[in-house]
Image 1 (spheres, one colour):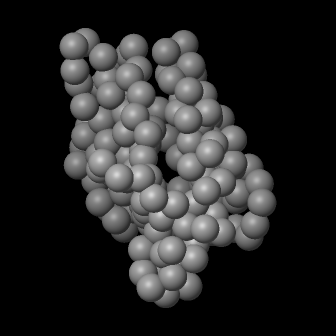
Image 2 (cartoon, rainbow, N blue to C red):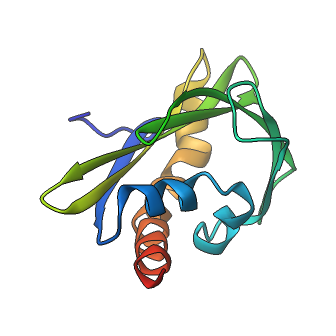
Length: 143
């Protein structure tokens, strides 16, 4: 994605650890709160699989149900949470390059109110995303 907006943005970091370790950490939903500073907790009800449902508890705002909508093992997954007239979609992608694992976190509000949610929530998410990514990098490189 070239153009970043308040309703669709991403960040990428390189992590000095194996693809398997990074994938394992990314798909351990209970650990999301360890690196995502905006979460109090995250729980997945069942195995990490397409259609699995879970709950996110942000530091601000109500509890949010989510579901995993797409998985390409060891490469990417997408989870969605329902918003009025749309969704918040988060796609996490891994790629191996020059002995490093590249991790991209792509965040997008969809639907007719995407610009509204981008203004209301997207700016804040966009502001903390680099810190969240660095937290992830530090934790996984310690493993």
